[in-house]
Length: 172
Length: 464
Image (cartoon, rainbow over all chains, first blue to last red; front, top):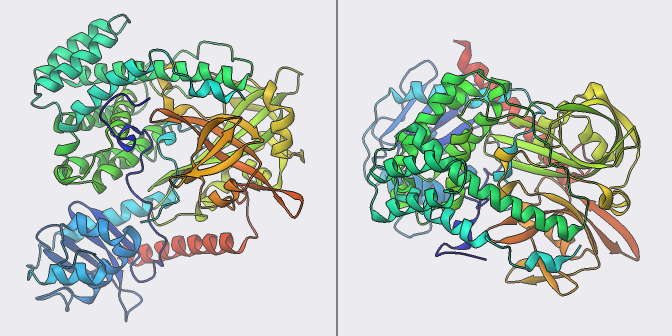
């Protein structure tokens, strides 16, 4: 019954565009997302339970930033990616799959098949600049937005538009 | 079921879909500086509704859009024309399904009149502005900055229960667009899907368009058939399809009862049930294989129960296959409200028996007396015990008949298989009310842990 030049996927109202996030343990990196043109998130300190780092890497330029919740710059993120940013890339790859992370950041690992290590190495090899630390405030507000989803009550009024969002058994 | 009717051509379908498809392709490159092909596409859309009450407004909108000068009302008119075409496709397919399943056709009754001014009209206006900017840039023109424009609108809408429906749609749509930025380097574009989501969201920015208020209430027995799950990164909805028997002895009806919740994208799989379970006791009844007794439960004109635990109590055990065999053929559906009609809304409960399951190019299909019906196994939620393998090995199936991309599809809700000469039923929604399954328990615990970690970490950040 196809009518034109479009493929079945292009004609489908329920075409799957994104694979759902894969479950991962959140203790080390409670929040990671691809948004605002950055890979960004919140990383727990390895030594101090009370400290978290707000870390980000920009798409294309790979400009990076990392600071604590008290707004102190991360000591490890002076001339290169610190361990928090490395952890961020690792968890993003777990959650979204390496391909989506590489595409979002516009990274092309030399060997073609991206994984956390090759994506990180390919970005580091371009000797990225330290980015503007003002990103931290935005990442923080995105994290709050993310947490706000936990506080919203379920409703029983029908949401007919959810018919456009069937589940999929595929994973990222 | 007369599966042969499902493979017969439906008159006028190809023409309607061709007009939709041409318009949808115009949205790929956007309407900011329309070329000849796009001008022809919007003109074609206008022509296809020339015999309807929309004619004048859509013709004007098409003219302005072809000149690259469409304003917000013009985009709304184009979305309405597209919606009308797909509404007609929905109606033609629904009539065909009525014939094929041979159930009593529902009576056409006008829905409740929509109210006037609505809460949050400024947010609806903001959403509309964003959607019109999208139409101008086209899917190939989207970038992070443009897509991020939806975030403040969604954040402001989500806490308002009356705007939840719009917020959930915009949120899911924007997340997909964000994951696809920049549009210029996309390998392929989900042409129909994004045009669907765009036009649906745009129509819902018209105040009074989301008329899902209850239209009455019902008292009687609810016999569940199965659970359909829908989810995007930050929302989940579970809909229980059921046969309702009125206490006054009236004819049985097909109804749905749904519960939905926003969620962080890291809460997935079986963890979703614990978000929904506390709000709807029906999920527990489904897992236990029970009916429920309803007293004055609100219901919409489309047959959606607006669930309230206070108005329901657990009833006698009821096997969904027994319900499907004995009650389903006499149960009439409700009609979908005109504004909501779209092929994606088609989800008709059916019972299939005596088929032969076979795989073609990795896709499962049921052979029903020589007629092939494709089975959409990807739609079986991972958060349950039903698997594509169980469906392939089954001999009876309760499912939802759907239509997408030019063909009818079966979404399995439950199957019966024969194991050591005994019939065993497997239900997609079996974990809805709780599970003792090891994999299910593990997934639920992971989700509980995820939520606890998020709250604790947030506390550290928020303390100062």
